[in-house]
Amino acid sequence: MSKDIKKIREKIDSLDNKILELINNRAELAVKISKEKQKSKDIDNFYNPEREAQVISRIKELNQGPLSDEDILKVYRELMSACLSLEAPLKVSYLGPEGTYTHLATQNHFGASVISMPYSTVEDVFISVEKRDSHYGVVPVENSTQGIVSSTLDMFMKSSLRISGEIETSIKHNVLSKSNNLESIKKIYAHPQSFAQCKQWLEKNYSSVEKVNVSSNAEAALIASKEKNSAAIASITAADIYKLNIINKNIEDNHNNSTRFLVIGERDTDPSGNDKTSIIVSTKNNSGALYGLLEPLSKYKVSMTRIESRPSKHNNWEYIFFLDLDGHIKDNSLRDANEEIKKEASLYRFLGSYPVAINK
Image 1 (cartoon, rainbow, N blue to C red):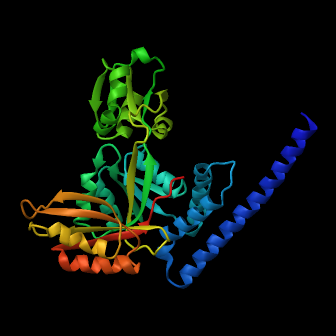
Image 2 (cartoon, rainbow, N blue to C red):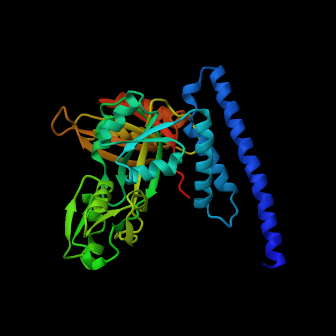
Image 3 (cartoon, one colour):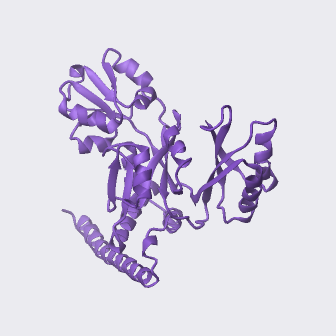
């Protein structure tokens, strides 16, 4: 070993000592915050989405490299997750089973130190949070290629839970199998959406192989882990969980494929400085009714980033609209626009104001 390498390694050891000391200092401060909250009887609010978003945004802004923003944010999310676990164990339910993309999104957002609880349906995730079996839930709401997840929108029609945050996760599909021999694969399991998102690649590479639909890609991985000459389309996380080989990586037809997830909880979230607001509205089936409903957004210069419609389950040919708006409900312009929308709407429901997803 050269003297130069030895000196560099000694510097690294010295930095590691300082980093470890600073990490534990940060953890001690987290414990102090927990004790202060206990004094003020605010212990239920130990997790603050707006505060986490502010910290992550600040770290991203400060990062000068050579590590990428994505890598730095992964480190900080795990650090914050570990510190939070010292205050109180955070329970987060998600659409399972273990190894789904919702599971991956939950880990990416909350870190590995939370107690992750898989449920078989979106409704079960909502019920878990409503019954306080978990503090928060994570559910898919929209895919960039396959569109809206209707079961999630339908649940908001009958639940009083708030949206506390959003997560955007790149969807990278992989062919996983116990076998390393491509020629031996006779059957591929996957969720129908995954087959649709990889249709061109599969036609080119596995056109003669039988495709079998299952309820989730995690279930596909589980089956492939037990069945000879079979494979699954799933995440790398699923490969780790179910001890499968990665035969082909990133087989999705659209490499910009991503899914948006919502974090649901009981409490309203304070402004973070970069927020989004979601509401549900409906109006009678009259000429110009939708225009009249949305006109306050133009009047108060509020940007609408998304609108989705769902048929009303009460009256034929009437629709429920789900709107995403820029800003927080405590912003004057958005608050005033919403007050006017309330007056015009036959149905109005505030779903929540929450920090915009921070990815990289």
